[in-house]
Every structure is written in structure tokens, then in C-alpha cells.
Length: 615
Image 1: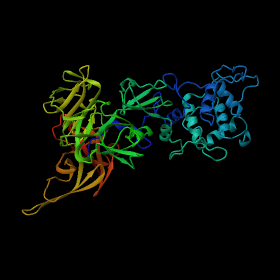
Image 2: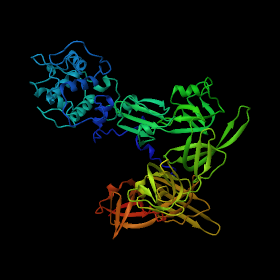
Image 3: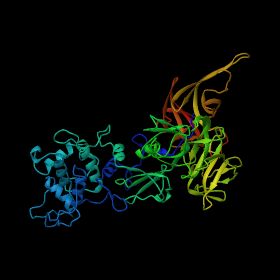
Image 4: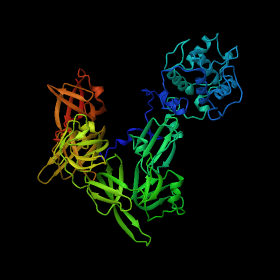
């Protein structure tokens, strides 16, 4: 069943679960730029801009070279003396130039100058990089610079950029050069990056995820405004673009100075501390509100141990970090606030008190408007699909969201709903009423008119703007769609049963109903679940399509929107292979059939299933 779908974790997961930002630099998303920035070879100006189009001077290249060498952490203060006539003791690059010259990577000119402000040419850069890889003039065949450039090309150091002999190197050229250098073979036959202690990915380049992980500081617990030792160019809060000022007390944050990026997480779990693993003396995982969480920091482990301030049976608030593990623990009354969301499921947990008495408590799984599923203890069990408000802190109350009816149209810009302005960071959920929910964004609702019953709950911020909005059956995106590929239905007087094979996102699933039939045909269908079981299924509207491309399809004079989550299948006899719209858009090769939701959702009517068959 497609339960609550989170868009908060759209960012890549660092080390499997850790959010890694897209490494954009001046519009570039090149792996080369991302890697050299994370390595600290390029750090940008005071605003974090890499200025990739600018030429690189010999002094600047010497600094990059040191950052790409085993001396990257050893450069100290001023040398106290002049290296060259034009590199005095107070020159900003004197230490970098000194390291390069002493190791024979760089040399000066016969007139006793280094010419630090001269732009560096391709052949100069090639010569220097070959030296850092261990190659000397004796290893090269021919004269300068032809021999150097030939070896440079042979080692793959010129990949990704086209600067030629006699031309100046730009910062983007240098990004490619050092990216390639890390993956190049040294004279002794080793990959250069490995000689510096870096790990490689499957392509033979520096493992970016591992690099970012190792270069990230944290977790830290915010006591108010977040302060970092640099001016960030990117800040994320719960995975969405944000600002440092958006951080609140008891948020958990991390930062990477090379990337000039800060990650902030506001994910708290309040409930009864019921178990520790492998032991309360030295826990590596704890159970709170019926859910087990691994512990990320030694400080949190100590607080939850028998030597710390919290014991099994206490009510605590866990502060979770970017990988969902416990970064810190505070008193339940300290970290207060409010969550809104939809119940997606429930369970029961046993709580043993100090007197040895065991009681059962209900634990609700709530998909919150920020796109994170959280668990909360509740005195009342609530069915899946219920909109709730959770006030956490000393009282930790979970209550049904009071019905707040609201009607009106959302403007074309997705910035207003009726008479209300939508907050810039508005959080919106759409639910199907049975416990399946999805986070959506204002643009998805542009031009939609909401009538009575569509809005389950909304709240206003201090400026009177809608900051949280829970909808029901507005987009149809929360429903579960599948392709029925076979059906067997028996409806005799004493024998009622059915069996269906349904493709769900490429996976065939057999649904057997011993006492029920759904009366569906082969084709696209929408499934309804209750407590994890299919309780209803009906066919979508079928249409033969003339064309399909991107997010639009046409049939005759009618145009259909294609869902961003559309399931596309190529049919070959009885086999169905999951594919994409772009792969089947050639209608000269494929005959296309679509199934769209006809549930009456005001922002629905999109093609959810698309099947292509060879003509």
C-alpha cells in the first residue's frame, strides 16, 4: 500500500540515509565542480560563488595544488621571508607557493620572479600536475610542452574541458583538472586519490557521498539562532530550502564548510522510554512511543543509560538527526510545539511502570504536514485517515483536528486560497480518507476550486497566512493505482471468490479474495486499503491515445495531463515491463492506452497508468 509519501527526503541520502545537497555552483551541476568543492580545492568567494568563468592565476593554482596534496592540512602562517622578488613574506599565497616550490612542483623564472598574478596556461598546469603525480621529464618522450601535453591527455587529465595549448585555465577548467587528477594513476601505479586516503566510487572517482559525510560537522542542538563559521550559500530545514533564521530551539543541525551548506532538522519524538538495546548500561538503540531508534551520539547514549538522567519508564523527547537517529534527548516539557497530520496506522505498546505494573498504550503513526511520519502515544485510538493536531511538550496531547471548513479557488500562481494568502513555506497534505496521504505543493493546486468537504483542517501563522493545510480527495495523488493484468471471478450461489494479478509500480501482486469479487476488468484500477488489506478496487477510465510526451497526452481533440507518478508499461504478450513516457512516445512504434482517474477530484483527472504495445 502506498502510505504517506514523503517529499522531504527528495535530496540524495548521504551514506545511504544522509541528505546530500545537489552540488550546484554558478548553475553547474557537474560532478567535477561538486567534488573539488567538497575537497576544499575550491571554496568560492565570500558569498560562496565559485566564479567558474574567471581565469586562474599562478598563485591561485598553487593554493589549489596544495589543497589537492598531502600538505592540505599543514600550511601555516607566513614564512617570514621572501621567496621571490615578487612574492614577499606578507603575500597571501606565500605559504602555498613555498610548499609547491620546495616539492619541485612549481618553479620560478630566471629573473628571480614567480609572477603570481599571471594567469596559468594549460601547459603550465599540465606540467605541475604531472609532477604531483610523480612524473618527471625523464618519463616523457619529446620536448616541452608537446611531451607534457601528450602524457596529460594519455592520463585522462584533459577530460571534460577543451582549453588548448597557450590558452589560460579558467576555474571551471581547474575543477575538471583536479577531478581528473584524483582519479589518475601515479607513476607508481596507484590511484592518486587513494594515496591521500580518499575512497573511490564505482567510476573510479572520489566517492562524493563519503567525502561529504566526512566533511560534515554535527550534529549540534540549536538553543536558538543557528550560528556557523561561514556564510552559507544553501540552508535546508527538513529537506526544504530554508534560512538560518528559521531554526528553532531544539532543532538539530549539521554543516559542511567546504560546501557552505547547513542542514537543519526539526524531528522530535515524545513518549515513554520503554526499552534499551543491547542494554540500558550502554544503549545503542532505544524504544520510545513504541518505535525503536538508533542512537547517533555518545551524549544521547549517556543521557539514556543507567548512568544518565533518563530511565526506562520516563517520558522523554528524542531529537532526531538527518538519518533518523537520536542526536540528543531533552525533558518532554522543554521541547514544545505542534504537529498537524493524518493518521496512517496505529499499534499498541506495553509500558512497565516503576512499580512493575504493565499497561497498554495506543501509538499512532501520523504523517505530518512537513512530510515526516512520526509516532505519538495517544489516550484514544483513532482510525486511519483521521486528521489530528499534536501538541507536544509536557501535555503531549493528540486530538482530532477541529473541522475548519474553507472554500475558494487557488490562484494561477499558487499563492492564494480564496481570501487567504498561502505562506511561502506552506505545508499541504492531500489524503484519500483511508490513511494514504501525500505531501503536495501549491503549484499542483493552481487554478483548483475547493468546495465544502475538501478542506479538513488549516491553520494560520502570525501574519494571518495559511501555513498548514490538510485536504481530502483533491488531487487523487494519495490513491493507490495499479494495472490489473489478469482476473478470475466466481459468483455462484454457494461459491463467491476472486483472484487478481495487479502490477504495482512494476511488481506483480496476487490478490485473492475468498468471499468477495471486485468486478474489475483487465486494465488500470484504483485500489482502496484498510488496515493494510485491499477492501475495494475499481477500474479507471480507459482512453486510446494519439500521443504522449512529457506530462501531456492527447486523444482526438482532448488533452490529458499525465501524473508525475504515472506507471508506464510496455506490453509483450502477457509480460509487462515498467518503462517511461519518453521511451514509448514514438507512436509510430507503439500503440498507447491510458487510464485516468475519474473520481471527481477537482485537481485529478490525470493519466495514472499508460500501456504501450508494439504496432
